Image (tube, rainbow, N blue to C red; front, side, top):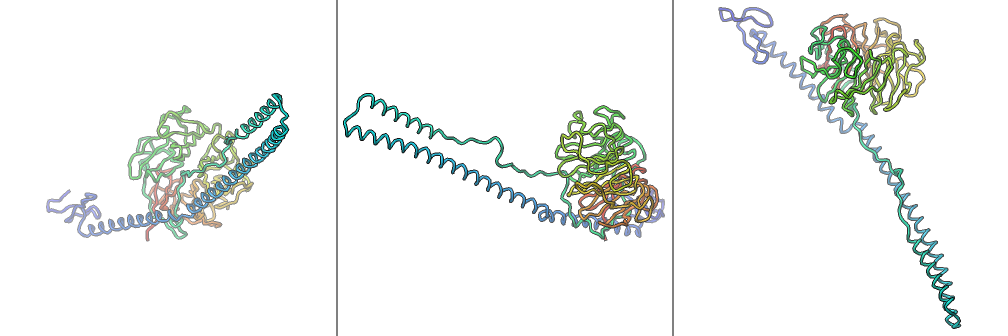
Amino acid sequence: MAAGNGKSRCFTCGKEKRAVRCEGCLQLFCYDHLTDHRQELNKQLDHIEHTRDLFRQTLNEQMNHPQIHLLVKQIDQWEEDSIKIIQQTASECRQLLVQHTTKNVHHIEVNLAKLSDHLRRIRQENDFNEVDLQQFNQKLKQLAEKLDKLCNVSIQQDPTPLIHKISVVVSPAKITSSKTIQNNTKWEQNGFTIAGGYGEGSQTNQLYWPYGLCVDEDEQSVYIADYGNDRVVRWKLGSHHGQVVAGGNGKGSRKDQLNLPTDVVLDKKNDSFIICDYGNRRVLRWPRKHSKSQQTLIAHIACSHLTMDNSGDLYVSDCEKNEVRRWAKGETTGTLVAGGNGRGDNLNQLNSPGYIYVDEDLSVYVSDSNNNRVMKWTKGAKEGVIVAGGQGEGNNNSQLSNPQGVIVDPSGNIYVADSWNHRIVRYAPGATKGTVIVGGGGQGQQSHQFSCPLGLSLDQQGNLYVGDWGNNRVQKFDVHVD
């Protein structure tokens, strides 16, 4: 409010001074702090330009991404192999046709020559009658029938395809720049809230114990398993309210209800969500456009968390059987890929497995929460290896306390939501000690603190998303710009 002497209260220092109103935020600043305000705006503009440069770099890298060249080589090899098969098959068919024709024509020519000799001989001898003529006609007729049979040749197509057609399938996973996140990458220590943050509740601007989350960069949205509200919600980045996309019809076991959902993945190929409906002991497919056509994919399972690989196979952790199984489309039992040897802390065992990550080599990373470690099981392995924690429960840089969300970047760095230590820790490949990248300042609700973080995600620019369970919010931490 303007004072009677023409002075106003500065938004920054709160003192009565002559002030200027910013046309953007509409706040009043004294001359000194107006300069500071402009400097802060310039820093934000620098950050936007840096993000733009990172995006341009990522965009340029896609045309030369090693995965693209590998796929082109596979297509070229398929083309070469297919041409060889076609040429070989065509050559065999030509050879068979020529052999068949040559053999039978030769046989007819031999019999025709014999008939011609006989005709010439009886004409010279003038020794024939009606019976002989009838026999000659009959033999000619037989030769003509053989010639007709010879011409009755066709091409038959085998119902089994000679060449298996290939196609390019765009999977849910994205090609991520390997240069976006480097060994010296740092993140801003103060995150900003992109979902929730208005206390525990069921309003559209609230969350109630957020668990798993997934980021859709195409739509600039984050999808959250809103555990306590029995729903999955979508928050557009920059929005102050979320949208219920699954559940939200009260706790229950009907097809349109959820009961304590713990995780969600976006299956873009089938335009649906895959939801870990923990309280109902089932995994659901929930179409994005037809909310009444839900499908139970897996029933009677203590599903803790789930993920999907590039082929569309599902991986589900079972916190009662202490195992992780891979479920291909249509499978009823799944394939064991981690644990399954009872509850324990041996390398072939798990103890309350939770969040899962699957890399391009189909190695499975599992947050083995009650063993305070993260395990990696390579494809086909009978036991896992410890890649984070495993040194007992604690808060030093080699220990974890109830680890939850786990993700891996293209360089093999492992990121862990160290829940009860209220921090996010990064482990380099082969490292036994981790580095705290955000949090670690004790439990709290400030922008640099967490209260039992759970879900984790990274976008293509390397920005970090954290489900802050106890604070009922999702925080985003941008890559630090020097």
